[in-house]
Image (cartoon, rainbow, N blue to C red; front, side):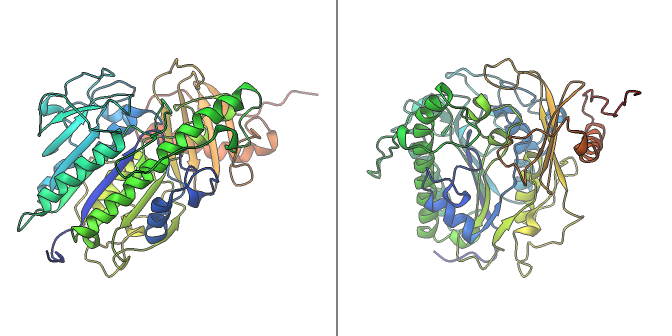
Length: 456
């Protein structure tokens, strides 16, 4: 098989569920070993300030596929269906001659039911689809689609089995004499709870962490909070190490198929997990542990095709589709509102390279729509901004609640929101937040933050 230098690049999204950005070796987490993700970061580009603009499953996925904010595409909560009349990223890819494939968790058809059937016209326009709506049991997962319209139980642990399915599909596709370039998505439920470690895999690897040995983040309260966090994190880190193993399998398979030099891997998650930092669990809160996600872009070969290093850009969920299309030199649909960060990844001598259309965004917009009543999360509707220069500002309805200088306080231990010496910073961020609300057509009542001094 020859290297297809005349073809546009292939792209594979690897989408995990609830993996926070810090949970990788190269990000300094001593609890976990992620050699394959670390190598991707070294050989490619790691966006170390990436955010989930809505840290909740369905809203993130809707924004990911459409390049529109949740309040613009209608997927504002979980569960919520994506209107099939709204174009997804598959349309420009297919217009450019790409084969499109989706394997794994979908969660965009308005259900949390394990047995929910996703009709063919509600699968985002993908040519090939083998997936499921939602399922929180990694050892008993069922999929359906092109290969079987009846539910088919996966053989083995979910991440391993779905990776097998992806690789088998790509091998069949690439074996064609003149195969189309492809855009493929592998979407897995881990490391979402329940935090049950995969004790064995088809590779014979055993994953285990002793809860007593887990080192907690400084913002996890002591007592029962820390005990529960260690138990869950032991499973969480084991699941991440299994994900890392499968990333390595994908990279090796692409090399064996001789398409590594023409394929971008993009690794990400739909949101993070507090895991008892600040005494909260899961997602949907504006804490760093929930909103920050891994985002790594790596063209799998020798690195001659792309830049390398870390980027401080605050890439958001609406930016991922434009950036992915930009990597392939495909025109970005005018309805997509996100920013194309691909010039930060492609080397200038590559045919797909294009100059930045404007200066890099200095901030990203975050939302929780609507109020979420889940235990141990922020039980309010909220809006927030994060900035490239290291600040975060969060408001509830008519109430300013959080202001953090993340440069000096990465674990968010000192809330500066009502510190009058921080008023100039808050006013700057408040204005940015107000602009996002107005410019995106959002509806949210910000508070009056004017300082009102009493007469002495």
